[in-house]
Amino acid sequence: MTSPFDTALHANSPRFTRPATPLPSLFIHGGVALLWVLLFIHAFHGRGISAWSVGIIYIAYDTALLAFTFWKTLPLGRAAPQMPANGPRPSLTIIVAAFNEDAVLAGTITALGQQSDPADAIIIADDGSTDGTAALLSSCYGISPPPEGCISATSPVVPGLRWLRAPHGGKSTTLNLALTHVETTMFLTVDADTALDTHALHAMRSAFQASPGLVAATGVLAPACDSSLSGQFFEWFQTYEYIRNFLGRYAWSQMDSLLLISGAFAGFRTSAVLTAGGFDPDCLVEDYELIHRLRRYGYDHNLNWHSTVLG
Image (cartoon, rainbow, N blue to C red; front, side, top):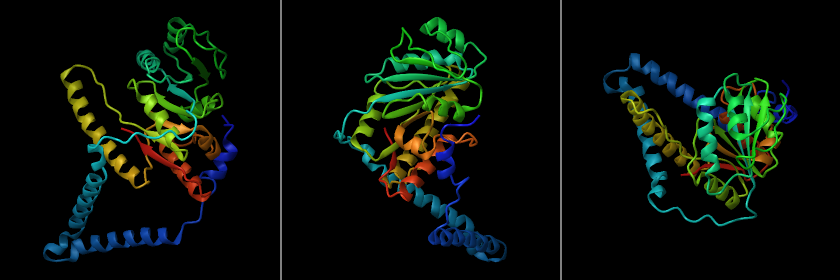
């Protein structure tokens, strides 16, 4: 299936239009590769502690990375300053990409309906589900099934809720189809098994209102497993992992170097994403790839585009 954003995608994706590699990048990558080869050879031919140079340098690098993260996350221990408004309050659409998610979709919709700062529109981007998704949306939310490839009228139960019935083509393709129905300043992608905190949309809106150059943002995710012993163990383990990921991303965002935003809860400035070509349907990590493309486009066109993590 072709995308209405194909022209922009081909113009801005390095898969199709390969940019020239800057000379500093060649020196950095070449120097790192050469150092690794020399240290690897030294591990077999060196004597004494120098034979452990590969491991020592790796430990030193890891320690430096931990110190960097600690230093850059110190502001989290202080109350965050109030972000001043800069321009009008941005309008917001939520896109919930769903494929056979009838078991969890209702909880996600409920959380979206309980927001302190509700979205202007909610699109359930149904990627050709074959389970009870259609029955759920019809019976619980009063939405008549639209023709395939089309979007429904607004639900009489949840304000702004609409159902986009897409032929099964993968998450990126379905997100791109949903983007053609977005008429707001910004949009959020939310996974069908993700329940947002009551103030999540307010925080996201405020961040985009305060910074006109902000094109992408994410927040803190917390796992929710069942109440069994194994479920609680995995929830504890995942909580530690998610917090570690958040701290790392926050640290890099302080250096304006954040390149990874989770599509499970990600906010985007609509005009920027459309300009860059939407989501790449051939990429397995569409959120990661899009952030790289947005950053490259902003750099190439001297735009003050940046991304951040909220929490």
